[in-house]
Length: 338
Image (cartoon, rainbow, N blue to C red; front, side, top):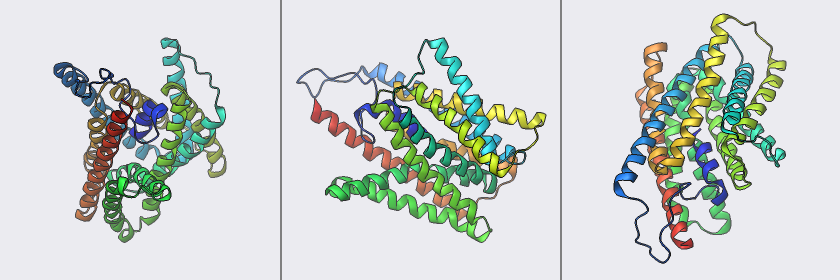
């Protein structure tokens, strides 16, 4: 989720390794000049950190609403209504800001929508079938898939050594995935676990498309808007085959909450990545797993085995390591260009 926002901010300078958007430039020829005053930098980092914490809580709360909504609707229906609500909210916000939603690259938005909507449908299915924290953790493997894609690309062009740390992070993370999936096999939830894992992979592919859209000059608002439109259309198409369900007051409330929470969380993350430290923000996003765990235990009496808990910690640690390596590569490229 947050990788999409981060890559949208940085897409014009590289899909996976790019300096924080809006970072002040160093003085020409002075590689030791501070980027910002210590006090201002600390305040900005602290403020953005709280935005990420709030966004993570909103995403976890959205997960609760999705899990409750799966009793009333199919995954396709939830994706469709989420898209409708999100598109309307982005439209209103864009008009208020005076931004245009016209795009010159509709075909790229279409490709982004295909991968993103598929990821959402798989993830929402997993949320309905698995403990909330498990489904959330499997979706967060998107960072590991990205690391795997980078390692694979580096191997093709002969840069194995440069990305060895990413390979280690991917191995640690997918070892954690095995631990997370093992209890689902024993409890007959393997299909939900597989769907959750593939939702992470499709999310990673979607984030690469977000980066490409950023390089093409598309704003975050346009990216989110057309993704929401794609979700509405794609979700409706899936629901046409899986069947439609009657509405209720509770169901409508959950659908509105899902769309509003997802949009608000994305806007908070966009603001956080524009202001704060990319590595800190990326690491704090994993609080969403902790929030989901608490929600699952308190609201759904979810049981998470010790193997799954260790696996979650391994995935979080690997994700943070991957973010650290990517940030280090971004700094090196920034120095090389200065």
